[in-house]
Length: 419
Image (cartoon, rainbow, N blue to C red; front, top):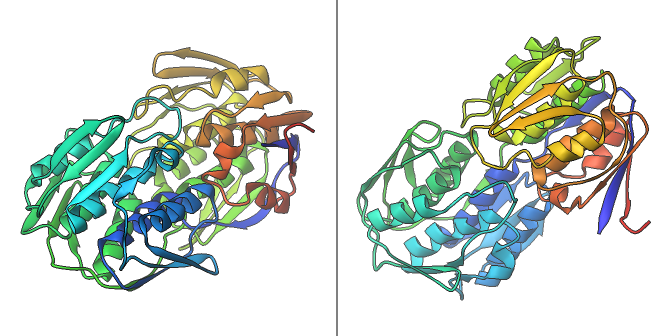
């Protein structure tokens, strides 16, 4: 167990490069199970969730070899069709192997998923979709057991736009007989990235990135080379870090169009924002202005940047209202921010944040991945020393975050939690 210690109060200046997107890498890695041949996947973020997915693929019998910041995966000899509890409990995205295994082998056994404690995220929408495609689903002893001699293309109208549900069904439909139409699909860029990889392997997916996805089933997928898109959430986290510290930060090798809602809000709060085709630079104002934020599915403001924005609003001038519309229970970071002197009142899905002149360092506890990032940002802005415990959450989704922050001038280091 380690913790991160931050001595705050230093404006961040400089440039960092965005890593590959964790939330695009995970479904792409899972989708390698759909066929044989060598898949060369580059620009993978070096984070725990990616390592967990690679471990799961190896456990199922795929060959996984590191190649620089990427991997070479060969799934010709899959020997197991079961994703066990010990792995799935640590990462919800493990459920993404369900669709590929079911479509290719006609059977899959996957533990009900775990992951971050940010409210219920049931997989019933995935399972209802698989049933529409002709699968038999059984739930017993904490496991999902799915069977289908051959999936059949159908129209699937999702009750709500679920990201992993859209990805799981899209992957399964690639090997189904006939055409599958997914309506009310999630529209996140990571879904489009997955579709691009699938198409590079010979799939016929159109409409990814919109609410209407069409998949024409093919008999098999072949090998391919692919580079994972940059991480928009990591990009946003570093831009907000520049704002919360009164600094000037540029993130390179990103896709600015993926962050339009954030860029709009940063400008509203007083930031000077400069965009190129693959970079964003944010210069903080003398005093950040309060603003209201509502999280929504893409293309709305991302829930995965809500905790980071709350940290910024804690030191803004005025009162902000943050409304969380995507996940229940995603205000677990509030009590920790209050320990640092933040003035926050929570009423259901709304948090009212009254900006204070200064946060103060304290010992705090991370509850989930993005809450960890929010506490890091609060620590950067605070006076004195902040110690963040349980940072294993952070390592699930951020690559070498302390090294990147140090390169921007932050005083931050990792140490054993018992020190």
